[in-house]
Length: 125
Image: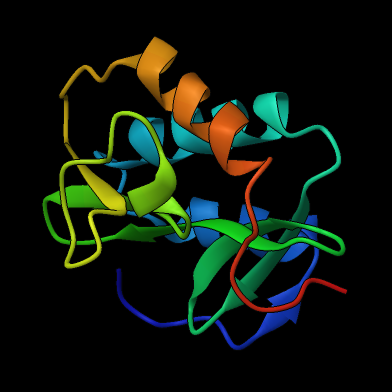
């Protein structure tokens, strides 16, 4: 994704980020975004370091999403504590989704439900 967004809190900052993702990856980032919002109804959204973060007050940041040239990466900050453990990342806490690739929505929802009950990363105000 070209041009990073400065740190900004709120849903409007995430929507602006989603709008700038490459057209061929937008269906993936929007689907992930909808699943996060649907699975964690009280989620707080922010753009930090140029990417969307999703967290819960008093618990911390639960997930982050980034868009690259040919894939979208979802990071679950408590990933190594999830069952099954996500397949990628040094800490086994991320999943790469490729353009046009179908992903296991049921598994992603299960990870999100688990993650929202685990300590997150950092502090969400």
